[in-house]
Image 1 (cartoon, rainbow, N blue to C red):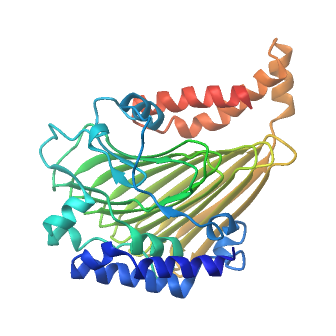
Image 2 (cartoon, rainbow, N blue to C red; image 1 turned 90 degrees about the horizontal axis):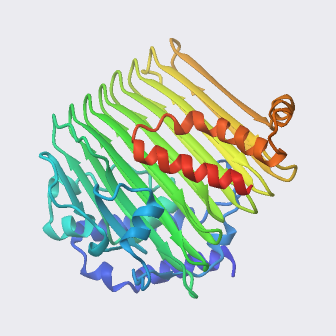
Length: 437
């Protein structure tokens, strides 16, 4: 089936969707704007500069049915283990886009923290919260964000009141279960951190089963003045799972965001991170780690906009690729004309473990101010021969030496994770993964 035919199927499905008719007027308008943007944009192709190295035909040409959340063989222990969540931590769990109360845990929340289902907030018609929904995304420019905006039905809303420090991390777990019929889900998250508050949020995307599925996720993050936010996005789709995820962050004056994106698997994965430093002195740190082997394809597209003066951004992404995997890094930093005294640094490093692995890296700077400090750079290389020889001379086998050096390459980023249990889980995962590579 051609991608254009499938676009028409999405448009027709939207017209026939009973849920749209039953939605409140403001939500109908939001969704209609989303489907109109998708109609205008269509699925991106490699002729689009931002998608030059990623062909979405495997997604665009396949017919998915709306997931209904049905899952017959999951357990709470399995979900906590696979998602790398803390067993006692607050969490919302969604299976195929549908809220699963039996796996969620939101009792005894600390003062100032509210965690709700998005559908619950919509039902209660809370205008202060809902006014933010869709406000921070660019559905007119991003086809998959537009598609999510048209079809999302549920997700999570996290709200932290001003001046609150939330000690324990908050987990959002999105599980996709593949079956004989390919399914699609469009989870949505809205995260609002009040002025002077601190919070840590972990989004975990997990795939189970052996069939095809497509997870099209969008998260909006709003950081008020002087908020301190840690955001983690851990993605473990299956070898037949497709994932397109977008994080849209808008930071006010003095807000500090540290975002970690860890992509460990997936047939075709595209991560889009867009941060707007929208207040003087705002800061963001983007850390990214991506692993791919076999025929996996993982694409990281990041965009940081310096809008106001004296903002700072620091970005480090690392990729490790084996087999005939394909990695993509496209990092763009835009310094607007009023963003004087901006400080922006971006680095991408890639390690290829096989002759058939491929990576395309494209750092970009667009600078419209004249008093700034900006730099970018990228590297692609193989394991160091001298280091391998050194380790083998001390009794390690070739595979063991390769595993140790690969782990060392990744450990720089894992070591930046400030949640001990998550860092430990990732360390254990990497040791096992590199041991099999």
